[in-house]
Image (cartoon, rainbow, N blue to C red; front, side, top):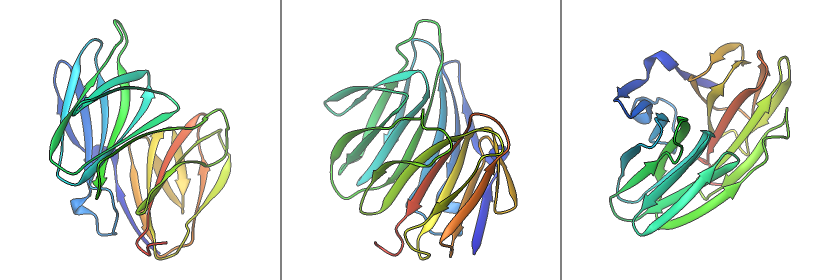
Length: 217
């Protein structure tokens, strides 16, 4: 099994009066993954955040605290906790994210990867199902799942093929995964394995899983 860790402290940080962005760029990954960039973003009340989408790429927006408004091309939308917005474009473009709240900051992920066609879809999931892995979406290239776990809960993520790779991002809390300590903001890449065993080390710990279909299941 191959493994590579990107610690939270190693992320690229960009900060302004309006936002804080912590980014992992996968061009340094030694293990193949479909993900090119993972941004964790905190946006202050009544402010906006703009990011670029490359040609033939997609972005998944995943709110973690609060809800966000977005504008991409002619499309406007609203995404809240328990939803994931998929936006794919054939041409280079920009997406504008807005915090609609007057007093509260919002917290969300923006995850980018290649895409071959323009598409916009909204997916919903139920995080009230504790201590289990919840599928969110599956494309031709990737599968995204999430799970919230109580302290000492144990679970196993089973890959569809040992030729695939798995990205695990710790949204909240701490975990032990394959004898490695992972804390909030850490990213772990795995390959050459059928499964990833883990144990939550804190309550309400949240994990995001992105499986890349290297084997093209």
